[in-house]
Length: 260
Ligand code: PGA
Image 1: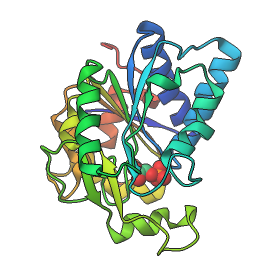
Image 2: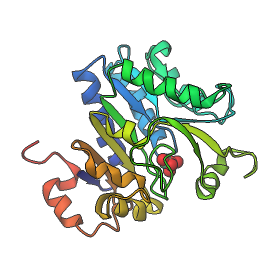
Image 3: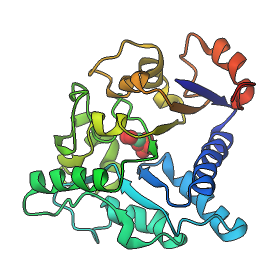
């Protein structure tokens, strides 16, 4: 796992944006795996800025989001469809016909999950998968004890995830309990993974992901099995790493190593 530690959130976001921009510039028809959540908002803002001011184009890109709440229509203000539209799609030149999210309002969410997994395979798989991490170590909505061999399916959200997401809804009761999420195995099949974590609240999960045992108790730890996973952290999120001096020796200030 490549662990890049940047001095603060702003620097971490710029570093992550460089990695995304480099992928899209090298591969204009890249298949991107996209994520939602608070961590990603400044990243989308920076990518939109580069589109506007520097000509970074997403016109050839295909995208697949990690997850969507079950029961929310795409135009629901708390759906991830709406989040993506507002935070990213409406600011860049991506073709909406190739910008996919799971259909949370499908009458048969299990069938919709299987269709989504097949759609990713039909697109040739994901070139670069963006990921956040939950305080409980989830990636996508793969909650602790999710099978490391899982595929896109329905997941029940933990109370802690619902509480973390409650800020976007009117009340805890209004916060959805079920989601469609791509699986851990779906994520591991991506050719590259880029996980971003910022802030002290993520420090414990980050330690478990990078230095803990590979365990379904921390689904993000499955990234230890991925040959091309990069983790971009700010100092707060890196605070509990015991081998921090090693990561900083390999990647001083989060920059490329001499052999990259
Ligand atoms: P956050 O969510 O960026 O809002 O912290 C990340 C996640 O739960 O995966």
